[in-house]
Image (cartoon, rainbow, N blue to C red; front, side, top):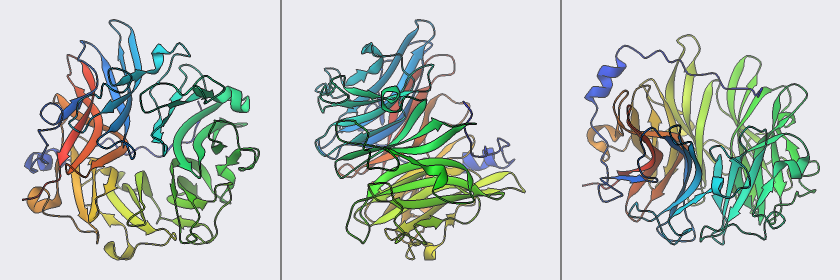
Length: 440
């Protein structure tokens, strides 16, 4: 598939990095979650390779979280593509599909690859994007809170197939819900390559012909004189106008420089020019975002990524925030991006009420971090740094994070990070680790 890609961060490990990682304290793990702080989605099976791709908290059912991922065992050819429901103690919730796991490959609808994204509607139903194996196509599934397909969705099948929607090659990626409508980003085959689009659907999974052009918005045409567009994510928010909108996070290039660009869309697919400057907020050059979060209480949009240095071919982790009007959040580091001095990148984060928590990758290890609302490391977390190593360090066995999502368990003061538990000579189990946010 010919798609535009972000520049890959150099794999050259800085010479002091391994030594620095050994000197860092460990982030605290909440041992009351799962087994010694880790929830295991599937049982260990010799030879299996597995991963989780995203995690969300239920906003409808207290104490629930949902994880999507895949597992494949070449020894047995057992392939599982799943959504799992976890209770707040890190155990599978048996009230969801009987055992806490729904396997899309058992539906006989298609053979699937790892799910791309998941969202929950106001009634507790789940929407999940699942690519079809070996095809440039996806299925958008809808499950109820009991883990059963909603047969009122997608003409009685419980899913919508992209081939039925647009009669052309289309791969779906990110999900957002707004005004009882469904919005999905994707890649549609163009004349020379796959091009980024946003699809507008109604609650039943049918194309909304009043969105964009016959239900499809061509993102590559939103901003003139730019190229190499990649959609980093989509979410709903309510700007000062009081009407629910969509926020679209983009990577793009203008000339020879890369930017993180954020634009606000109305729910009929039009750019809201009141947001930012003429509908957009632009980062400084070469800020490459890996994830973002939207918080309705703080009314802030936060971007987690890295500042890429072309001359040195290396990145440093970055965080910046904008308000709901699309302007820099001045209370956070004076409205400027906060750049960390260790080579690596932040991958995901979430609001805590008095700041931010998240994690990032630093070549051979991972760090969890905590920031205050004004953009300083919160040294109550892993004193005296405000950050600490989480999971294993290459090439050790243990937990490794993946994806650009985390979620917060505020009642138990935990940061939940999805990933996998690896054994070099054994198996890989899709897992979630719980970082304790409790302070002395």
